[in-house]
Length: 136
Image (tube, rainbow, N blue to C red; front, side):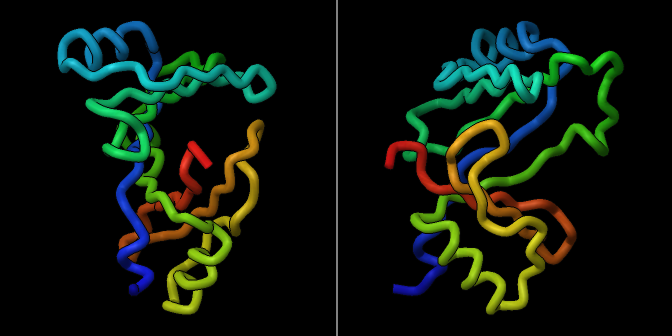
């Protein structure tokens, strides 16, 4: 089996100024469900994952609410990253590096958490997160 067959699109992240309005739009209006809601007091942000099915089965949307953000985000910095699951982030990062992919941040535990993450760039400079599945 090739390395390419071990990846799937996990989630996309956007930053939001008003979490309640965002949840109303994505959940009530569009019909997504809140799958996970985690506050990170040390980092002063909240992550809410919404989707149409369970994480690890469907692609989800991560809404990041930075508690101290006082101005609207412009569209350029509202984009965060695309994320793909990899069974082993360390091995996946080594594979991508061997393919000439630019490494932005090597595999390491998530800031303010324990999940293993690594970041690379696609050929256009878009940030791609590799992460290990939530339910290990």
